[in-house]
Image 1: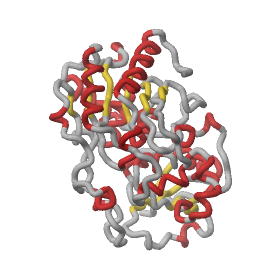
Image 2: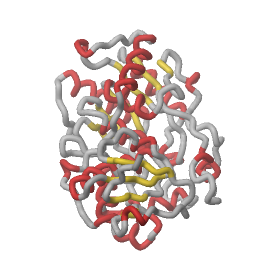
Image 3: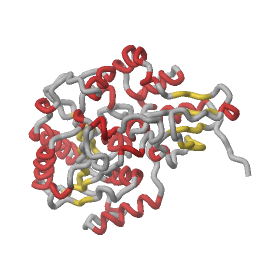
Image 4: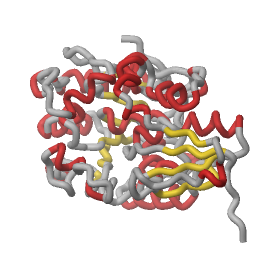
Length: 345
């Protein structure tokens, strides 16, 4: 039995969900040009069930050989981040989707083509509805969208982590307004990524417990705890049902590309929202409220400074306040009530 191969191969060394989801507009574009796309990646989960991909090959090290016998010269390497000159010239002034399409094959998509793609299966839908029903959130297609908000209490890169007390106070305010809060996320062993190439693990760089990337959910009483329960696609489908999702940078991609309903209450990190927010309905600000911080934003090319331990800003003292986040929640609640899709603040 022979294996069907795509006409073009995309090779990506990125591992994070957000970075990989930013690839999906590129796959759609390449599928229109070539007869099918194959992918080599360290993390296949965000690419599963994507109709634009024929095969997914798992990379084990960055030295894995590409199957050039099948693809000849039609291999696209998505590795512009290794080239510091490329970072300084381009990434500091462009959206992440453009960063990948321009850096890989020199093409730029129109805004309405830059939407990100996640594809779940019927079994994911069934399991999510079953779990929601167990917590009193019974839904059918006739009942419409559930009235709950989703929060991912993640703790990771310093610039992307809200203090525990901020999460506690914000969640309490949501509950005071009658919204049920569903917690999502997964504790991930950072050593599972790039296990054989000798690189320092993500957890070591963060100086955190290698098996802990979430706050202890016991700190958030009366919430529905689905952390470490849902797989990636089930989590994405859950987002699509929610009225609103509170996310720092690491989750806004999922919240903004599941469908056209869920509002994204986005707390940006160092990077300006114009570089990172996903497009929906041709806009980065469709059903998205950006929590305005008093800090200055930095271009993507400077973002590596903080990750390498250089304090370009005082992250701890320039966090958005609880009141700022709650103001966004109130604005979204009003927009939902009035069936508005955009907020201009």
